[in-house]
Structure formats: C-alpha cells, structure tokens
Length: 233
Ligand SMILES: *Cc1c(COP(=O)(O)O)cnc(C)c1O
Image (cartoon, rainbow, N blue to C red; front, side, top):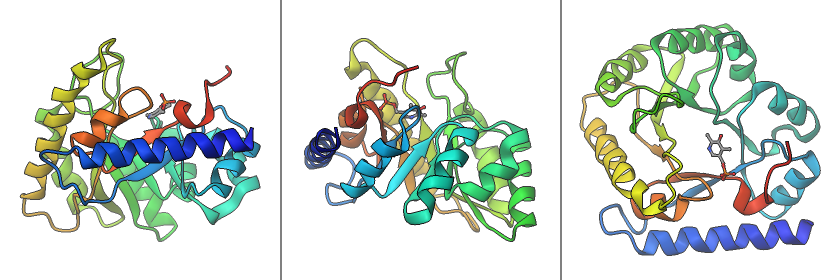
C-alpha cells in the first residue's frame, strides 16, 4: 500500500506540474503547494505519504485531527479544511497552522480570541461560496470585502488568502469559470490597502477538479482520493 501511495503522490505532483505549464493567466513559474487530505484515512497511510514527501496534511474535523496529531506530531504542517464550529475553535487554534474555512465575523472573533489566549497569530483563509450553493459553507462574494477588512484589523488573526469548493459538476470543465472568477477576486483583494493581511494563498481544487484549478491559478490544492484512494465510511 505504501508503494501505491508514493506512486499516486508522484502522479498528482506531475499533474500539478502539467497544469502549471498550461497556465494562461496566472504565473507559470509560481509554486503550487499540495495539501494531502487525510480525513478518514489512518495514520499508517499518513506516515506513508509523509515518508514519500508530503509536508502538509489536510483534515476536515478537529477531533479526528487531534487524535492523529497525538501520534504523528508536528513534523508536518496541519491545515483545517472543513467547516469549523465555534465550540471547536479553541482546540483548532492549538492544532492547526492554517484554517481554510473561516466564513463569518462571529467565527473570526472566536478565532482571534482563542489565538490571543495562547499568544498565537492564527493564519486563516476566508472560504467563499462562489456558486451560492445552499449545501456549502462560505461567504458570498459581496460580503467578502467586509470580512476581509474585519480580519485585517484583528491582532491575532493573519488573513493569508481565499478558499473555495467548486460544485460537483458532472462535466468538470464547468468549474473553470468559477475558478477564474476566484482568481480575479483574489487579484482584486491584492490591490486593497490592507494592513496586516496578505493575499498569498488561493486554495482551490480537489481530486476531480484540481488540474483545472491549477491551470486557473490555484496555488494551494487539497487532494485526498487521488493519493489515498476512496474513503471508507
Ligand atoms: C475532502 C475534502 C477535499 C479532498 O477531497 P478529494 O475529492 O478526496 O480529493 C478537499 N477539500 C475539502 C474541503 C474536503 O472536505
């Protein structure tokens, strides 16, 4: 199994490189960082991935990540990619290097407060619900400037970019206009006179759509199934 994970990882890395070389709008030479999404996979699989070169782990539940973290420790960077509930914020701030899923002022305040308590400045991304799906978390794009400005004023939050989850379209090409729009939004925010924030990461693309996300300017992709195979629930 370990060999399979390594091979699949290499394949994902190659696909990312191909996507980068095909970019028309975003920089071809800008580095693209891979988040290996390990939710519902055990620590053995995670170890195999880390041995094969994975440096960032993505988990979508705080509890699950905390348990795995006890065994695996800090040798890798931990990213929270799933929805964060207010009652889990304290634990999340202790655990994660980057939280991809901040999507309300309420949550922002809770993260700032929890980070303050442990003398940390928490890196976060704001999740955008670009396709306005009822089933998805994230702010609508018209609410984005407000939340960006709020985050920018907080002392214990460091806003470092945006995240989105594209709809699960049958024809994956249908994601392309959304990714383009995200890239444009990201570019516009870069032009704002921000104080502490830094529009560094554009987190988009999962197993079914990351080749397109990379072509359209993602520099942080979250890939699970393509590396670890299907999840067993
Ligand atoms: C599970 C998950 C992923 C990875 O999904 P795959 O299809 O397995 O690559 C990426 N992002 C988020 C937010 C997820 O919850």
